[in-house]
Image 1: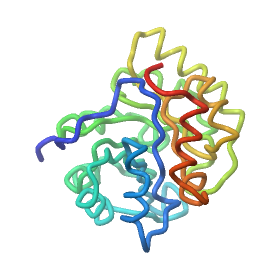
Image 2: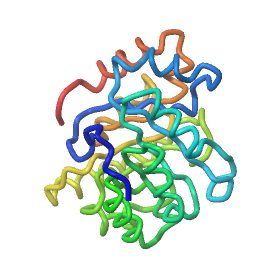
Image 3: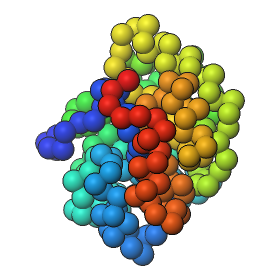
Image 4: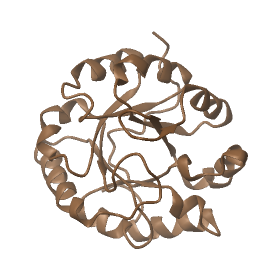
Length: 234
């Protein structure tokens, strides 16, 4: 068991946050791209794909370790993998501050949540667009964050699926009715046109990839998204 990462947890505070996805960054200049936007953000979204749970393969512990050596930002690792329990310790040791695992991969998420707690990192659950929220509601009290996928997992640059807005609304109602502080993150197709709708539905953490790193001015893109959703606490 490693010591808990000294970087302060961002989980369970319901602050409004933009979490850029490095999957959309220029990997040849990754450190430079992160340094550019660091003054405007608190966390980075790191997509870990295994080529099995989703068709693509992306990022792993060497990249997470390199990121940890290069930045003090919170590393929010989205595990699009079949067996998160097998890899969570190596991901934590590499420097992750939090992990989210897909409920479709682990219908019983308790062992993974307990392992995350043992390792001193935050734990959350993600659900794909076609998965009903009832799959994760019984485990909300174990989650520092829940991730609503607004695109099909595994591919960057997809269009936002408006049908997930009702799912975000229902999750917000469930979280608030139980007086939980669980963050609700929306991941996929977030840009200047969609972030407001996701925020109005009840999300407070927004994963933005292409709309940040492919923008002419990534810093201004983040600033503009912040202005749409407002700053401070929900």
